[in-house]
Length: 426
Image (tube, rainbow, N blue to C red; front, side, top):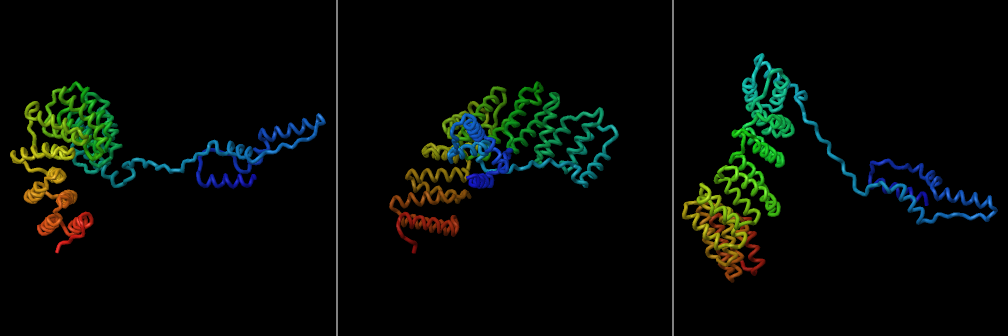
């Protein structure tokens, strides 16, 4: 039985490696002999001999033995598979590159004996290597009676951020935030921009809060600061739930922007409209749209109409989208391909197939491309009305005018044949 348990333990160790100390297999027999069960057995035998009682043999059954060994070995074992942790690479310094050391020494030789921040700025702006720039910045910090100013901080952060050396940039940013008298709107906007590029939104918000606490009017958040934050919260997200969560943050930022007396521009208002559309709050987007030119000084542009047409069509409000489309054309704006496709899909699904087809030809005239989904939706709705031959004729005409390529034509043709009968074009 001991051999069987040993074999089970070896199989377990081979499947699940562990990092905790455990008794070896050699001490397994010693532990069994020194266990409370063995001691109780020994004392009972000894007591029986002294009292003249008949000797009784204590037997350990299989269940007791399995419980014993499970308590010994498997109490601290992890059943999770072993995952090797990735080692974080240490950031490389200039000493790892001999040619950069020589470049650093040449740059230091160009500095005057008692250089000031302006002299250092002229050297940094001509230096293309961000690692050399960082070394020059650190070298200047160690010089007596030298103090960095906004220009040296700004150019160093620009060089490091453009090279995506965010960890090194973070160290310079901490120095900036530690000195209340150092800073400018352009410097803080640059920091926010690179933090948003690195998807470190929490740090970007910390810099924004630092700007709001500043007593210097030149360091307070401007419309450019808010636009950077709006862009970061709206970029690269297609999940409506995530957009809904981020929209609360954008709403608070916009409210603070208005309360602080910062006038929103067209980009800020379009960001609000886009955010509301992505989070499925179309009525709120329409509210912002109707306030443009009335509450706010700027008027809607083509992007404002594009976002709203797409959002309304997604909710099946095609009639409202058509009104905005007509108003948009009357002002001389040309809808984007996304707005055209959304409207064509909405019209086709709503049964207005002829208007959807005319919209396809208009897209061709305005040099806007229709996607595969739009073509399929329009053709499907024509076929559902019992006009399969008309749909095939339209598909052939689209191919002749190079609106669909050969592969797209075959896919659409197979869809019509599979779903609406085996008709083919002669």
